[in-house]
Amino acid sequence: MPDWIEVIVRTLASVVFLFALTRLLGKRQISQLSFFEYITGITIGDLAASISLDLKATWYLGVISLAVWVAVSLMIEFLQLKSKKARDFIDSTSTVLIKDGKIMEDNLKKERLTNEELMEQLRGKNAFKAAEVEFAVMEPNGQINVLMKKENQPLTPTHLGIKVGPESEPQTVILDGKIMDEPLATRGLNRRWIHTELEKLGVSLDNVYIGQVDAYGQLYVDLFDDQIKVPEPQQKAMLYAELKKCQADLEMYGLSTKNEQNKAMYEQVSSQLEHVISDVKPLLTR
Image (cartoon, rainbow, N blue to C red; front, side, top):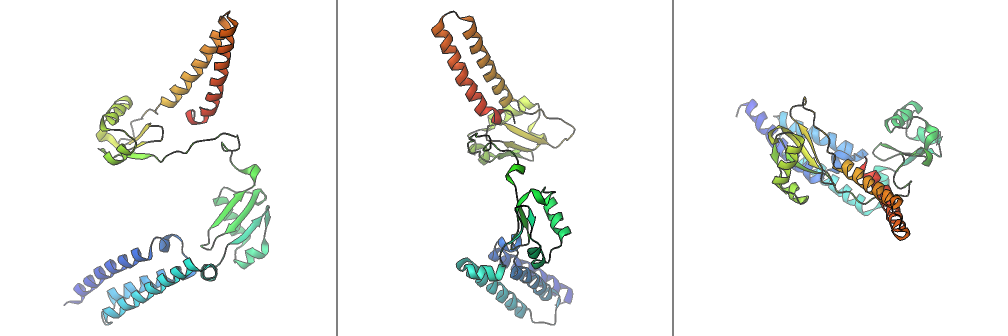
């Protein structure tokens, strides 16, 4: 067999075998690299390259070496799942870099991190002042996570005492101009609804690159033709305006009637509706 053909065959076999081993190791191997996983990734790649190009070496010895590395990785991952001490030894532990706005210089030295590198990482988390940070922690994978002080955190409905119900994930119902029936059925909708909504927006199905339906049943589309401006759905804004109109009508009825019993009823209902509008305003005006 010519050398160039043997290289092609070995490379294709290495790709298939390496793909199978990577799937066996799982997603953690590419998302959360510990020290050992970093070494394993480099070694496996080097072994796969050697199998492809080193024609003088016996190919199955490289395969055995790859299999041993993967087996050791799997055993270590299993050990980490079973023992916290093993996790701490292999992955190391988290290190607090900032506490109560004070930088922990000793911990910075321990992690061989300079103050410039720390500030760079903080800016990546939208924290430009160390004094505004409650905690900054370096995770075992080297990532720095930041918790801002309470007064510097973004305002949320919880801070305002507003209870917000869970919001289901948006469903992608159109891809490349084709309707996706399964996610559409998940929302309890059908193709007729899609065509009706597209008519309201004034766009054709074949011009839709991506179409998504949010938790409130509103369709948002991105078109192939970026020159066409698609109007934003107005259902929520219209509902909010309608509720405000109903409240105004109730107040007007209360002021116009001379019957004290009816007047009290209109005022009570208007007050109740005002509370309802206040509760749903964050959902209808964003």
